[in-house]
Amino acid sequence: MRHPFPSVFLAHRTGALALVAFIAALFCPAAQAGQDGVAKSEVALGRTVGNYRLVDQDGRYLPFFKLKGKPVLLSFIYADCPDACPLINQSIAKLLKGMPKGVSSGISVLSVTLDPVDDKPEKLKSYSNEFREFTIWSFVTTDEATLRMMVSDLGFTYEQKDGEIAHMNRLTLLDPSGKVVRHFYGTEFNRSELEGAITTLIEGRTLSDRFTFALDKLMLYCSRYDPAGKTYKVDFKIVAVWGLQFFLILATAVFFLVQRLRRTN
Image (cartoon, rainbow, N blue to C red; front, side):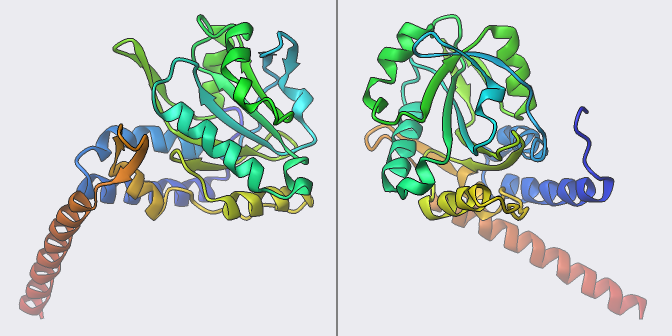
């Protein structure tokens, strides 16, 4: 690994992630498929990304290092994405509109296409027209080899599936040095949480480390896309049923453990 973590820190992170993944698998039948992706995503925290050669929607060369000096909000999208990408874009636009000018003007926003073959600069320009009021927001493409390296560096997961690109729904925050400091999962993001994290970085303070795969990530595993409302909704019936089963399993294990200890004594 290019950017190794201290062994103790990594051990704690790995152990916590394993616990969350186990609980998620018990709560939601669909969780197993997402465990590896979340693990890969969270391990990317602390990495400093490379100087990738990018091209923006206006056809201008944009080296990644040109963005250094400001925090960067980064998402992966593609122009023909039917559902999640438009939701992520709208959430970013809503965040930028709600942020104080002093905060939004101090960051760069970068949306990287996962389909560099079809998403040429002219297509991205048309795709991004509704967001052109945000001059800090660039929609970029690159060659496939660079995209693969970038995706790997940032711990992102995607795959071609049935003519579409199945991918994580994630927004990543990088500090002014280009280091990955936090991931935000889903298609809607908490403005106060994001604004607080960005403000901390703009002021030159260190963003406190915390695991971003807690309860909200467990709920993400249990979310299903609602095409009518064009959003992701948590299926609380699944959560309740699997939560009850988890409780019963835990209670049974504790009961037999207590009985064994009594017999031993």
